[in-house]
Image (cartoon, rainbow, N blue to C red):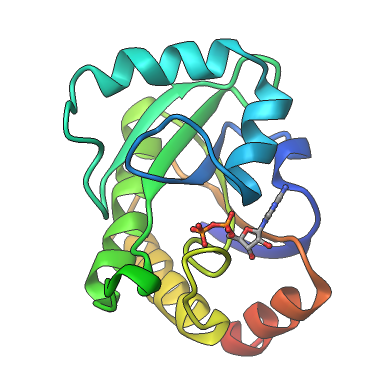
Length: 172
Ligand code: ADP
């Protein structure tokens, strides 16, 4: 499994699945969530409404679900709910769960490539370095445990600063 760190807009990535840093409502929001909904088109919100019926109280923090990608280059969007530091969700295990569950969903879809944003490092207030540390830890373990389908995991970071942090933490 290859690991790549890129700077750019995740909605342009031509990978099998992109991961959305969603909120529990699955009804869209700011940041990367808003960008993904804009780029995918209104069918994404309709698909999220359908998924949401299975989670009347909202998708729990640390969980992940998939929808089609509609107008996106990627075939699927995997929506995961990161912990919100401003709401006292400071357990790194919850963040690790986001990455792990998203990879498991990607694998169950048969995805060979998946792109992640810096989950919880925006509006949800987590320190970039901590997010990167958790992300690499989970992804490397997932790769080491033998995941035959997944060939490429990308981290797509929006800002040069976030990209530097991810490169730094990865040791690349
Ligand atoms: P959260 O609520 O989980 O913190 P945000 O969307 O606020 O999610 O931020 C997560 C990260 O995604 C931030 O580093 C933000 O700069 C970044 N981001 C915003 N838009 C995009 C995009 N189009 N592509 C990739 N990353 C993005």
